[in-house]
Image 1 (cartoon, rainbow, N blue to C red):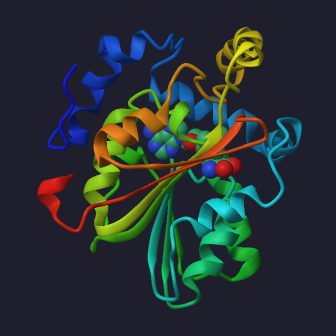
Image 2: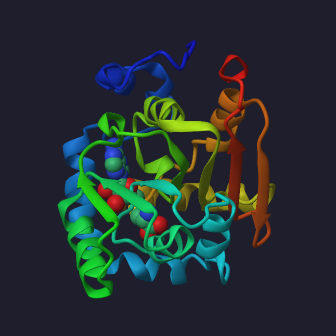
Image 3: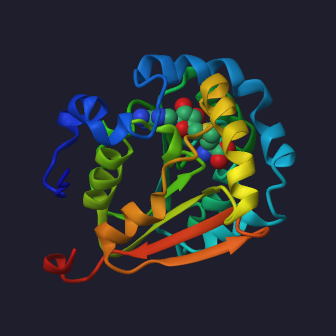
Length: 242
Ligand SMILES: C[S@@+](CC[C@H](N)C(=O)[O-])C[C@H]1O[C@@H](n2cnc3c(N)ncnc32)[C@H](O)[C@@H]1O
């Protein structure tokens, strides 16, 4: 399948029917179902960082890779309960803008409570499919925080996100992955089992390959024996190069 950045989000319906997604073994490609599943797991989501041995400081590091500064604008795709928002908000400060988009009401309710508790008036949370999200001005940064592999039409969302970035803006995908070698092969059946029950993420998808095809150059950092990673890409200043 050839993917071009000009494929628009309105075609997202077609992406989910494409053989590219079915070959990843999704059991449920319907976005309503994804949203309902996350509504159900919203309460226990913070446990997963701990259960899956997220490296200490991982979320902060991922936010740092966006190289935001006071006044910057950033979008988190699939912001969930808002566990990355403190780092993004700290990076852009009170005069910057943070957008968080998510399709799950239950996850967003928790993120909204976090913003209200901290009085963050410049964090804008929107309930919608990330493929349909628009911004008034190009963004300085976009993050997929543990979300890329949970999105059946991830390629459409990735290409859309790229169009939202300003030239020179940064895209970060941070997530867990199967470790290389025998360890990964042994964990795969459990990861697939978990995906089918929780929509925690499809272990067969390799986001860094998609990002590299799009951006040309990526920086891939791996942690905890290759079971966590931060993938960073910079949108070329010359749009012809993207
Ligand atoms: C594993 S959670 C990650 C939440 C949060 N970013 C974190 O790091 O804890 C994945 C999130 O992606 C959201 N999501 C899945 N598909 C989406 C879509 N098409 N558009 C927006 N959000 C989506 C889910 O609702 C869920 O909240």
